[in-house]
Length: 320
Image (cartoon, rainbow, N blue to C red; front, side, top):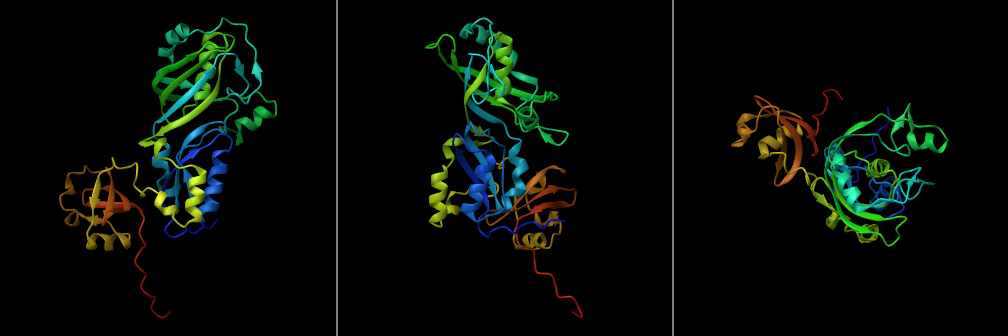
């Protein structure tokens, strides 16, 4: 079994990062890992290389909370081109010429209700989805015909923000979209273009929101590098429980914290006024204003599930 690499002390928390056009999300994680000297880094959802905007990075002990951030709703600003489809559904692919009728704002507006609400969406053939253990884009680049199963997604907002007809053969549409995690905006462009008969693809995409976080809070690579070199990277980090404040919090005193360090359940007697939390509900356990564990309410108290503080030292073994 592979050993987990130790976390760098103090480099624990949420880093909101503003990704530029070009690098992959993996590239960003790798560079921040080097700058921070922190091997344990995860994220709350990737961005395509051409896309920009908000990446939620989790460092150190916060990696154990990554799943709570990956499922959050996402908000995007997107620019659609109605000058034909492409092989990748974005500007990086080869153009697929269409002889269908030209798109107009009125025609697009009339179709938008079909692209809102609960949808079944087929991921792009050039995506990171795996088929038989191989990334779909690897099969597509090898010339294979990739058929991916549709998945349930939800689009709660899809509004046109601009329409540019300065090049009539390729009108551009700006839009803002609120979507569920796992929704491909490229696939929306592909399907919208197919419905219009003229083809469409994305030429720009920027994630401006992820769960409760906004790109206005995010930091560029230059800012992260400057902070890391200056020894102040921790000042850019949000606390472990940033973004999950909706989970009820229970404050522990010293007796409860000691039990937590031993990995023991916390009995009702140490929970004070927090007995109103329903049985089975997830809770945050805090001590002195800092997240120390996530747990689950039971009929007898709270059972810790993920503990973020140092355990008590084990007693010496007799005869050792």
